[in-house]
Image (cartoon, rainbow, N blue to C red):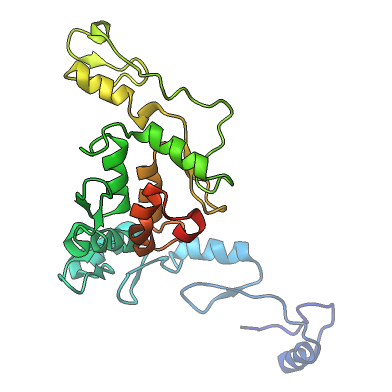
Length: 275
């Protein structure tokens, strides 16, 4: 609101407020206005407006309800409102009527065995899995009764030989000696459990500790996401597939990974066709 007889931009003065307003309208000599978030007060500087809103508590509430138009001055108050009225935005599974608080949680549910079943078969023993990452874990941990010689090391060797352009595999500065097994002895006993000398995790049996030492837990990062804008790296193929299945970097659809993985594992599927 303007009350004086002076131009807000230049030094001119006028005999009436109306003349001053006409002048400022004609020459666009109105000064900048900074409005209060709540009332009709206007100020010539943001600092003055901020001071007014601090004094009067006139800041516009910044935290909104996910369902209705109500806004609150803190996230705590917004959460209390949404809890009381069940106003959280829900992501609903239409088939089983379950609700989830995030899109990612809903996607994981839809990609679980509850909806997908077990349609990814091991090409060697025919055991069925829900996902490509499940099949990869089965093979990388030497769990397949038809291929006890397979593990994460031998699978990496086979894939890296096919992956000439480094689409999935890392080019290591020194090629690891995958023929060497890490074997712990009774010296790993610490009076209560068998302890890993690398990460200090403890195990009830020496066999469990040795399984840990020869797992990808302390391996180099052997794989990377094929999406060039994603920097994620992985120690085993199962972790890479789990990343792709999550669609977090939106590089490939979950369904495509599941469809192609058995032929990819056996070498019948080319890298470009797989992705």
